Each structure stands twice: as C-alpha cells, then as structure tokens.
Image (cartoon, rainbow, N blue to C red; front, side, top):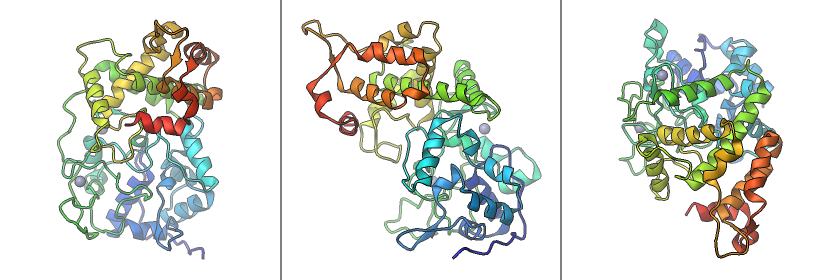
Length: 401
Ligand SMILES: [Zn+2]
Ligand SMILES: [Zn+2]
C-alpha cells in the first residue's frame, strides 16, 4: 500500500554537494527521530522480499520519480534540490552511475567497482562544518561525490579523504551493503558519528554502536597530497561538474578507469619515481590486499581501485599521466606484457586477457586512439591455454588470490 506522505514538521536546506544519506542524518538529528522514521515519512522505506523494510542504498545514486516526488513533498524541497542529493545529475558524465541506475530499473541490482554502493570516504573537517550556526548544531555535509573512487582528496582542506573510523577501524558503512544508512533505527546519533556495531560485542544490540565522532577524529592519513595530486583531483572534480560537456567527461573516466586497471594489475610497472611516498603507499596496499584482513570491507578484486585514498591516488595519478601524454602508445609501453624470447610468439598472460575483455566491453566509451592502443597491446599476443579456457570471472578470482 502506498503510504500517505505529509510534510514533516520541519525541514532543512540541503548543503552544497550533500548526499541523500547525509541530508537524512542531519534532518533526523534535528527532528530528534531515528533516520528510519524520516525514511518512512518521506516514502523511502522499501518492503523487501523477506518482509523487512529499509531504505535502499541505491536511492543515493538516483531516486525513481515517484520516490523523488514523495521525498520532495515531505521535506518541502524542490525537485531539483532532491535530485542534487543523488548522483543522477552526473549520469552522462560518469558511466558507472548510469549502469547502476539501469540495473536498478531492471531490478537487477549490481555493484560496480567505480562506484561505492555503501561505503564512503570522508573529510573530517568537512564533517565538522564551516562554523555557521546550522553546521555547528548538525554538522557539515557528507558529500555525494565521496562515493566515487576517483574522489580521493578534499581540495578545500588539502587532505586525503579517510575511509576508516579511527574508533573501530572499520570502513564506513561497509557492513551494511544494501542500506542507505547503517543501523538507521538507532536515534540520537550525531550525523558525524560512526554507526558501525561495536566490535567488542559478540551479539551486538542495535544500540551498541561504535559512536566515534568522525568529525573530531584526527586525520588518519599521515601524508598530505602533493600539489600534483591536488591538481589532478581538481581536474577530476571539474569533469564531475554537471555543466561540463558530458561526452568529454565520460570518455575521460572510461579511459582513466581502464588504464588504472592495467596500472594496478601490472604495478609497479607504471611507477618510475623511486622516492615517491605515495607510490610506496600503493605498493603496500596492493601487497596487503592479498591478505584476508584487508580493510576494504568487501570481496577483493585484484584490479579494483583501492578504497585507501593515497594508494588509489597513486594509481590514478599514474593512469592519468598515461592517458594525457602526447604520445599515448609510447606512454603505455612500460605496461606491455614481457616478451618471451624463447617462444615463437608471445603468450597473453591472464591479466592482459582480462584487461582486453574489459576494454572490449567499454569500447564505445573510449576514443579511437585509445582503442588503437588496446589493439596494439593485445592483438599481437596469442592467448595462453589458461586465457582460452577460463572466463573473465574465473580470471578475476584467480588473480585475486
Ligand atoms: Zn574537507
Ligand atoms: Zn567506528
């Protein structure tokens, strides 16, 4: 039955760049209600197959029109303000957003590597707010762009984003894959408090949450981003401006992500500066990823962008340097498969076969020049038996070991 939507007694102005989840956290805190109550009264609760109800994490990517209208009516926001709380304005700029929305529309929910479904990085200083009355009372914004792996730094506060809670050492939201807000039935938590169940309890009650104030925690990242990384972040943010030409941005992100995949699979081949501390972060992270105790809070995929911001930045920086080089083919040379001097022809190692498969799937998103490089790097190689006999999914699992 469709719930009757009435305006809430009070609402809030969304903060610039704020996410849907962040807005609901601030609004529920203002109203003295658990986020669940706001979800229900704004029409976001969804009855799942098992009879339980919760607001889906997919709503933070885009709201179906009926839900967007109900949410706008309850919160007294304009339709444009509601849409701006989601990633929908960037659907033509950032390819992963459209894929997630289409899958949700077709009721085939899927997670994509280049769009965090529930985890989020964060800047403690942004969560602390700008000192204005409303932000002192309710905290600053959880930015909607923090869900994109390509956003690794806060250019305003010149720091890498965090992804771990300093209290419980868990990735934010990682244990609640399908929920818009973790433990949303618990009232009274400040919007910047960690909602992860306390790790010291074997059978955590809903109220036994970590509760660490993320806005008051010291920055966990020991490194400040070098200027070249902040410049890269600024350029990426410009491409995520809804006013920018969407085709240019979409092509850049497709090529950046595919190149980052090969950079990650062949790391440290793309790394040339021996004393780059961020490259060392990437090396450390990729080595630790093989451990079952990795901090990403989800199954490990060998070519996934690291959730650790510094490690991710190093890989993206290397990928960006390649795709923006004047000679694209020459820039890819360090990533080429090594030749076997004894063989009559080169065999295609599984990681290149996997890369070729992913490039083929996104061919239409890439420039002709990029497609030519992919062909040059892979077509003169023959597949190994392993490459021929295994699906890309099997290859991904074998490479993740
Ligand atoms: Zn910040
Ligand atoms: Zn915590």
